[in-house]
Image (cartoon, rainbow, N blue to C red; front, side, top):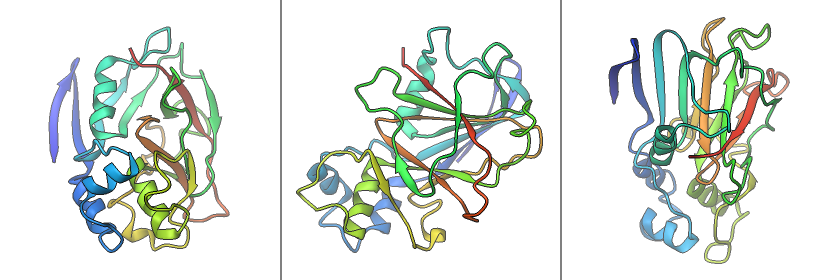
Length: 237
């Protein structure tokens, strides 16, 4: 699903990352499910609000974006998007000079899925940035970031034996997932991948709600973890 549009004079193209996400989860875990995905969500007390998962928005020209205010509260429209589809990734964008160096940088552990903030914290939204004006980040990154819905972490835990069905309930805060699995069967099916692989000098920003999504790094070459990505935590309006 691809949509084109114009935002303040800037052309963009938007596309869904993983269409029909619920159907893909159902298919991927069909051998361990007792009933439907809705049944599993109810038993685990973990909702899955995503019909589709992840959105890529690509601007035709480098575009400065204002995504949050001085109180670190993100635009309400962005809250609505990540509530409906999970990860939101903007390509060919950059932040203003006033805020581009705010926050810190981090390198997430390989396949160690986790949340940055619990759902009770005010700043429960995470923003990850590749700064096109930074000497290091202006280059494509060698490691990607993976995102999964909370119910995927639960079902994968049942599969690998780290979660007890009908005993362990609620969302996981941290878990090693997909270790030793064929990632070709995972990526684009139950895990959304942000590659950070745009050409040199192209900025990228990803946003999630930690209440509904976990994230981890994925190192195709474990010996080359890539540079630290920009991280900042934001509140909703």
